[in-house]
Length: 131
Image 1 (cartoon, rainbow, N blue to C red):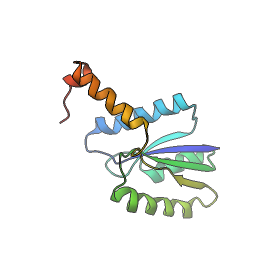
Image 2 (cartoon, rainbow, N blue to C red):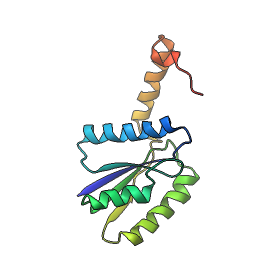
Image 3 (cartoon, one colour):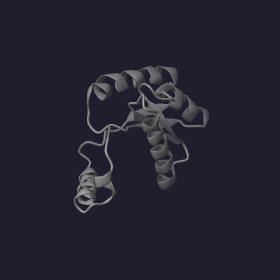
C-alpha cells in the first residue's frame, strides 16, 4: 500500500498548520488516498517521522513525501533529504520517495491567474489581507 505524507514547514500560527492539515484531508478525499498524513518540519505536529510511523502502522509499504513548499530552498535541499535518509534506516522495508515542490507545475499559473482576476474584479481575494 502507498501512503502519502504532505510535508509543510510549520508555523507558530496554529491556523496555518491547521490549513495544511485541512488541505491534506481534502487531498486525501479527492484523490481517494486512504493513507495520507500531514507533517511538518518545525512548529507543527505531527513531524515527518511521526507521520511516517502512522502510515507504516496503517500498512504503508511505500511512502511518497510531497513538499507543501512553493520553491526549492534549504529545507528541501538539505533538511528533507536528511530526514528521509534517517527514516529509510528506521523503516528499511518501506520505500520512501520525495516529489518535486509546487514550483514549475503548470497549474500554479492558473491558480495565480484566478487570484489576480478575483482581485481585479473585486472578488473575495481583494478584500482579504495577509499579515
